[in-house]
Image (cartoon, rainbow over all chains, first blue to last red; front, top):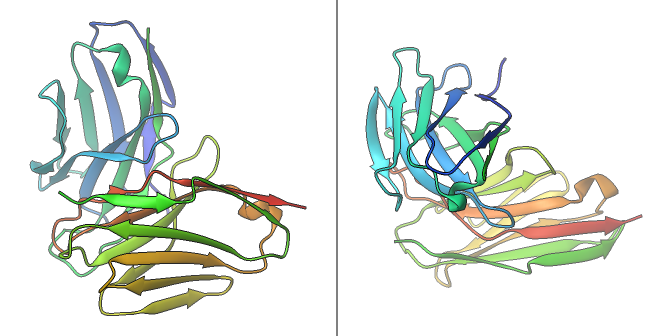
Length: 115
Length: 112
């Protein structure tokens, strides 16, 4: 049973550029959440996608956007990159928030470095 | 919004000793409390969780306790082993929101 997968593993970008990160959820899961984890910090919630729509959003600017595809995979896009966007970006998958199964399973993350 | 505080930030124990990590939360509506273990270069791994209708849950050497009145929950690891060394995160979430609020993490070092 494949777990959550993310690509790429590492990425280096320049300030002002745009980046796209990808995530495939665990088999059987239909909900994808994205988190930003700065060095030495806990993950911070960016947003969640279910049925191809953004269901919830954390305190992140509109430069952060996403998409979910019919096969439940998801993309995170960040425009106009800032140095402060350097972090580990984590994808977590789960079942529909309306179910009683709350567990979120995380992927290995994408390490983004902005120079 | 929810605020989760986690202590201590670092914890060093001798192999075989017990380790306890504590978290407090602010939102009384939170009702799901998972714990994650994160090893270097990897994503967080769910190790145990507890829901608000339960006071304690145990899985082999790992246990979690929840005090809803005081709004705090704790992770207990007994008979620690070097492979338990990692960063541990607590989190809190509301049913039907699935938005997790994480603590700042505890770096556990188990000395052989």
